[in-house]
Each structure stands twice: as C-alpha cells, then as structure tokens.
Image (cartoon, rainbow, N blue to C red; front, top):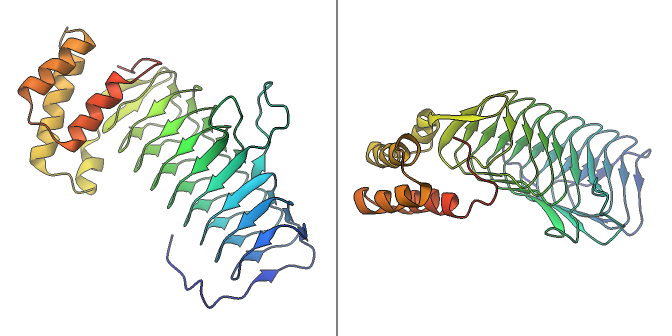
Length: 267
C-alpha cells in the first residue's frame, strides 16, 4: 500500500456507523456507512474502514490499513473448543483487506491470538481461522481458506482458491499455485502446487525479485537437490547438506524448517 500522511488526517465516522463508546479510535481513522465497531476494539491512526464492516471482540488494528466492505474481523474462533474465552486478533500496519475477508480470534488451546503482520494483501473472500500467524509482505489471493494454527512466512504468495490444513507451516518466499490443497508443510523458497500439493523446485523468479544473489540461489538449489532428489533419509540429507554446501542464514532457516516439521513435508 502507498504511504499516506496519517499525522494530518481527521477522523471521519459516518453517522450510520455503530461505534461502541469504549472502542478506541485514533486520529485519522475513517469509518464508512453501517460499519459496526465493538467494545474492545482498538484502531490506530490512518486506517480506512469501508461500509458494512464488522470489527468485534478483542481486536487490535494497526496504522494505515484499508478494510473493504463486508469484511468481518475479530469474530470468535470457529472451533468446538472455543467457549467464549478472552482471545485476540492483532493486525499490523499497511495491510489491504478486501471484500468479505474473515479473520477470527485465537483460542486458549492455541496461541490465544491470531496475528496478521504488516504490508499484506488479503484478497476477497479470504478466510483466516483461529491462531494463525501470518507474517509480512504476503499476498493471499481470492477465496483461500486457512484452517486453524497455520503459519505463513514473509514474502509468500498463496494462489486463489487454495485450502490449507490446520497446523501447516508455509515457509518464507514460497509460491503456492492456485486451487492447491496443502496437507503438509511447505518449505521456504520453493514453488508448490496441486490438489495434493507437490514441490516443483525453487521459486527462482521470486528469489531473484527479492534480491537473492545467484550464488545463494545456486547453494539453495544444491541443498534442494540433496534433500528432495536423493534417496537419503531426511536426517541424513540434512547432514550431507551441512557438510557439502556453503552455509548461510537463509540455508540454515531452510534446514531448521525441515528439522522442526511436525506434520511432515510436501515433496
């Protein structure tokens, strides 16, 4: 999103909007017709809320977000375990949240909060369930459904109409194709797609766009080949990578992601 001068903006609330008197609305916030803002909501400077938006529960919205009509933020977790406990939705800064997006709060069985970072683009009809942790600079395309407890790393792109199983992790700089089904973890830096997603090598174009050097990309390719193209056990392959490939913080993140997977890795 473009940066705007939030210091010099006036708060604008349409007379048909329903704002609880205990809600905290900062300077420079605009709220459109028929939107409803609940008691425990906090909205920071410069955020623009269109018409017919509902923000409820213990929800914190950062600065300079744009929230489009019919979005629903801060609703209770859609979980049979949720019994009305005090849990949170926390949204960072500079996010673009389009029509009919739903963002649910966390559960006490999970992290207790759902978090959305900064500079994300959530397209129309995206659903992000309880206890998800969404990083920064992520694009999630239309009608993507994220079940509970999902983690997505920075700079990832999730194609439209994709469904992601609960507790799945998706690493940073990953590209997921449209209409995919994601039952297992997807490592950082890769491309993945399919009705039961498979890996299709490194996301080379994305890595180059984000300034990864040719040398670093080649090292990641070498590690990818050892891990996913050899017949070694994962633990053996990781050991081989550490012994043969030039290490970097990016490669260490890649290997640590694999070592800490609980659901298993898409291949």
